Length: 325
Image (cartoon, rainbow, N blue to C red; front, side):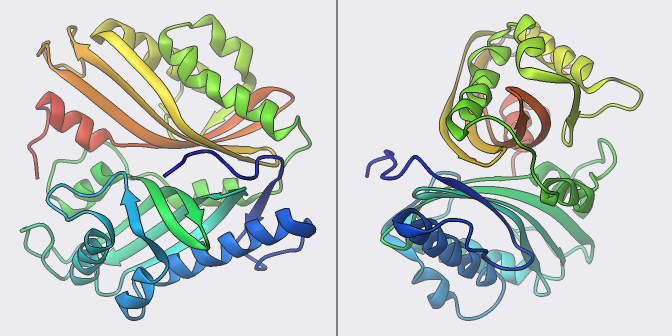
């Protein structure tokens, strides 16, 4: 199963409101239009309709790169996971607020909510209302979803359910979605924007603090990593320095980048050995990995806005900071 894009020259960004606008014509237009329709149907089928209809939208050798532990592989795992969420949240809803389509890839920013009135992963119902965000990156083949990389704010969900203690306020997901849905900016080419986004992992999270000033705008806004009263760039510098101080033997990379207009979605990962204090924990010397999906808005070669969802719950479980589920 190849990761190579058959089409790389055209990226088109779509907002869900208003449906699919004919922003391009010819073969390129037909590819992304068909793919976006499939992804919209996929989202519509997560909490509604017969799950066999959802299964029909994925390839026989479908790969979920973030399947839940204990779930089967492929289509069987997809059905099992969706069944679990439908049981846990019978009134569940999910809406794709923004789509980014390029060639065989479609990235989505979605907001989900529901009331936990059923069992989930062995945990009894809490009756709590939950809202969370998901960033998906899907690769399509022959109008079916062949691969998906999913990043959800599971840590926030578990805090809202009361399963783990609150570690801060629940993010304003609707405000995040509203900011992402606004009209784009005039900027560089898609490939140039993707090159900027790639440097976030290649340079910044490699510990090059000087690279922050090179690829982030002075008025940069983070819709993810925020601290009251602190400049977002200072928060970023603090987090990068904290990673450098807490983890050695680090490595990192981008799995896939999807660009359209002034937006670039990325799937990234980073790993390291826990040899320094982190979030108040003593070094464990454990080798840990964190992964996530990000969306960047880029203007004049600089990142002006960022939306990132990282697997913080899985990361903290590896460090023993919270128990496994």
